[in-house]
Length: 365
Image 1 (spheres, rainbow, N blue to C red):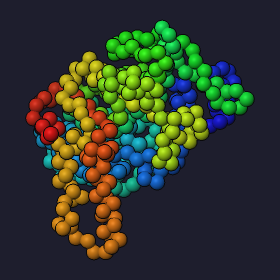
Image 2: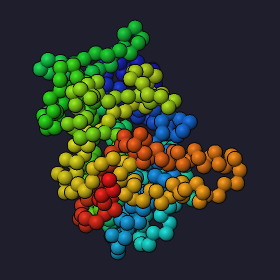
Image 3: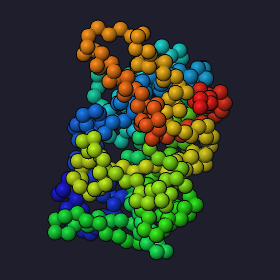
Image 4: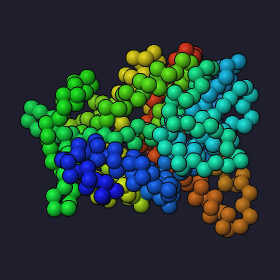
């Protein structure tokens, strides 16, 4: 990756947004082009589906409800940004007893991590346009938008500046330029004024891509699970004065965004106001926006055997007992106040389906 960046920087500095695009998505040397999976307990970071099988169990309950409420229609269950396909395959396995016409799809710009097998239940495509358009669609994305390339911005006096990447004596370093008008327009559209010296991380592609999903949807739900906040909280001048950009490698988080390009993940929290607005402009109705833990609890996640009382479980060996205790602890991290389920948010939007009576709309606490 170093020589790719060196060649690019030979012709001038790179905007940080373009640096992220190269570092993550270069077809040969980018972070997501690597053969090893970056997601997992022994990899760079852990996602909710990988953390515990109770996640796909809960999503499968939503699949059953969706199919039941769209009786008579061909139902397509689609994981956008499916990665290695583990989530959609798990959901497909957990949904085997669903009554009705159901098919499963994974969408990802890079399908190299999909490992074909005889047990594969989902069909994999690179773009939304390759999906069948008829029937009802349940779109699910988990940490899709926080993987989009993003710009890093800072307020200097009356102007927003954009951070760029330069090379000085073989070392990557930062520089600043006055940001394009598109970013001023972005903050104005969100009713946001940055404080002097405040940093912000923005992808103009968040809203554009969500609009594509909403346009595609004729009937069904869009379920978006990600790290982020509405605009007024995401760009709060005190709580997030230095933005949300972070790098992940080896289960550790760093703010050194220029280190080891291509070998660490780069991410920023999502502006859910962008997604909500994009969906509603294209005909969806917002039904739910809340914490992941509340969403999973409403779907009956605690019905999984990992939440049963210990005395109801059969344990034959000490090793089995240790593994079970670890699995139970990981399951709880999805719903306990100090776990991942409190950190992530879920946005659900609907089009041409019933707007009331969904399990995720029930009041739990």
